[in-house]
Structure formats: structure tokens, C-alpha cells
Length: 188
Image (cartoon, rainbow, N blue to C red; front, side, top):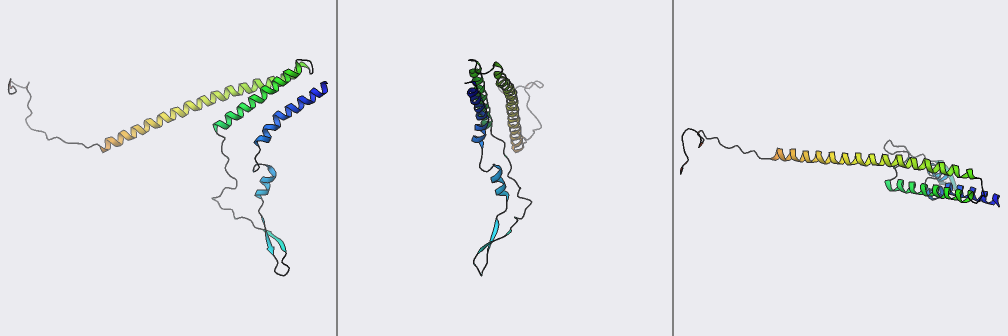
């Protein structure tokens, strides 16, 4: 009975590793299909006498300096990163629960709990560091957005100042000042 449980635990561990890899696979990113797509197609030449198709020399596509040889890889979006973290956390939790479930009744030795527990602790520590980095990036992004908004407001104010019409008022030689000398305004 214990060997069957051991085999079941091995299958479960490999399933935790292989199922996400299988779900993530992309037909364009597999090794063989990538090699097939890089290989230049052979030209087929039809001989006029027999009508047979004979493979001709491979035509090399001319490399232009503007076209990159490989498509540029894009960074995964924030949602994809969070989904990957959740899947990894769920998988490690399942692995830890399975190892506890196998070790508790005595089907396996107690120390099989240690590797999944260490993996879970390390994963949680990495998540904590990642959360700190994400918070720092959010603060930097918000500060950059505030600085850009402030710069835009200052530029708009400077442009408005430059467009403002300056009116010069004529200066009269004698300005009435009711407190100067003993002059009074009319009606006082």
C-alpha cells in the first residue's frame, strides 16, 4: 500500500510541474516548429520534358537591415504575472496539503512534508519582495504622472502668459491725489 501512495505522490508532483508547462505551450514557440519556420522553403522546379517536380536550391531570403531576424519579445502584462503567481501559490498549497495528507496517516515518513514546506515558505518570501517592488513601481509611476501633470500645467501657464495681451496705459502728467497738498475732491 505504501508503494502505491509513493507512486501517487510522484505522479502528483510531476503533474504540478508538467500541467502548467503543457497549458502554457504555444505551437509557435516549440522547438521543432521554430526550426521549421526558420528554414527557407525549397523551390520546386518543373522539368519541361517529364513534367516532374524536382526540388531546386533553397532560396535565401535577403536580409534587410530594417527587418529584425526574430520578433521582439514583449514583457507579460501585470494580469499575466499575477495569474502566474496565483497558479504557483495554488500548486504549492496543493502539494503541501498532499504531502501532509500522505504523512499524517503514516503512509510516508514525516520528512516528506519538509520540501513542500520549504518551497512554500520561499515562494511566500518572494511574493513579499515582489509586492514591495510592485508598490515601489506604483509610487514611482504616480510620482512621474504627478510631475508630468505639473509640467504640463506649467507649460500651459507659460503659454497663456506668452499669449496674454499687454495693454499700455497712457500716463498723464498730473495725477490727482486727494491727500497731496491741500487739494480736495469736488464735493468735500
